Length: 150
Image (cartoon, rainbow, N blue to C red; front, side, top):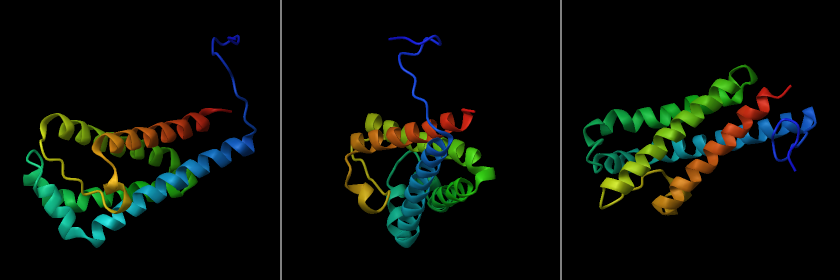
């Protein structure tokens, strides 16, 4: 049944629950980026080699091998503090969006798909990886939406 605002259903969250959900989503996003950045830095040679094998970014592999984990750690840092959390969520969506575009390009144009994300995430297929990214983008989007509610 539609409500007066035209929405099919409306969920009212208490301010405490809304804040708790925002914090939980931010912590999950922080955990993901700290984990993947750590994996990329601990096994930097393998990450660099993986980037080097991708034709359309291979010539930028060395700077990207440092910029990607740096962007992940900076985004995690922004997510950590209340004053910068909104910016952190926007950065998280941006970085995950770029990763998703990279995956789409790889799925369309590359025959051999190297994954160099690090850790357990490497066990995902590329399609699963894309869905994983889109799920995290949706979570961060939900956190942004929760922030706008009075």
